[in-house]
Image 1: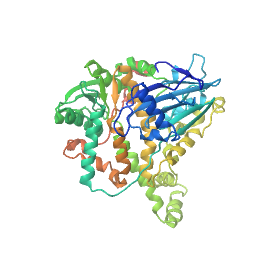
Image 2 (image 1 turned 120 degrees about the vertical axis):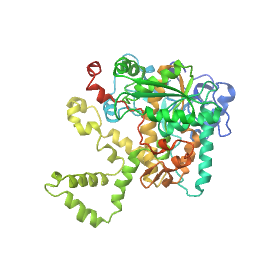
Image 3 (image 1 turned 90 degrees about the vertical axis):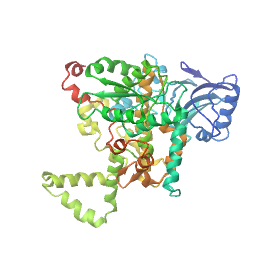
Image 4 (image 1 turned 135 degrees about the horizontal axis):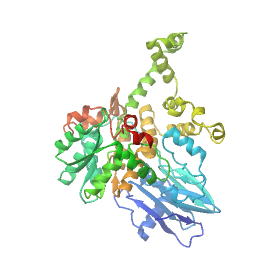
Length: 507
């Protein structure tokens, strides 16, 4: 589907309208061609199962097909690595990978999308910036039948949270899965990867060498700003795995040149500032002859590596205290007149307020536009056009969706939607596309995903120790310095530079 396709239920014959990505069946057979055999396989997958057969398809994909009975069925993978947007009008449906391909020059902007953008720093599916142009959410499929459209999930996270296997058994299985996932995501050409110096990108760099028998080509970005530069760790990993290492230091002048170019390449507003360093990394790899670069995104979200998981576990512990202590002692003390003027009591009051707020509402207590004051950010006529509760209502629905009894696993699955599918993956996908190279995400391989959903909860977050199993399983493979370092990534020192660099401040 190079451009948008206008489709009706009166199509002459069954056909595979669109296929993208690397979908494969449980037996390993790829479903990537547009021939009759692939068409029949996709028909079997979606017909007679209510679309739930799509849950058996591994890999990243987007697909659209016309069924023998005239229905048009379309779907995307569970992390929305491949996307499909749609618009229904006058009994017809249009499909395209990008929202702007469906929006004509006169397509009105959706005010709710503007609000959502400033709330999330992205526009979560199914909404797009354009009215009446929608995006299929991750793990969902659509059926267009006689002018009527239904959108449903075909997959939702289901955690078994077992305790069965011994650590050594799980470690060996995990390493094998990492090896196989990395091999699947290479394209046979020169093998390269992003390297931030963190756990995930370092693991991918090492696995490339293990799979190919040759050192990976690694690409790192640095910043001349204290507290933001991780190049020391990237160099350490490069020496450890003897990679073919490449570096580039991004400057404020680079941002002035590239912010308009990167922003213009997206199909709608997108607020992840680390898109800029990711773009320079990808461009450096492209110039070096790389055709497909691997990224480490997903390890934190599958195996418990974000600091907020430990933070919210501490908040949840408050509810374990007896009610008479919470309601009869702690909260009356922190609520006394003048308590806000005492540092310790002020902190205790903040803790109890957050601990008494259920998830996911707690996550938005420090949302930027709420802290600034919504009425100071938006005009009254604008606010009359939007539903202020819409973002939180969607978050509550996503939070409730996984089958799990664990708050930690529920938080992981929540991040699969909002951190990965709606923010980090579009960042990497958009910037590599702009640079002209393909990208793979071995950490999001379907078999690794299944492994993470049956891993014991305390293997992901042991007390407040993040991604315990991941690190212990790779001890001896990764340098110890990487296993003990604090998480950082490609964070951009935008605030620091904007106060010192006049052209950037002007932009």
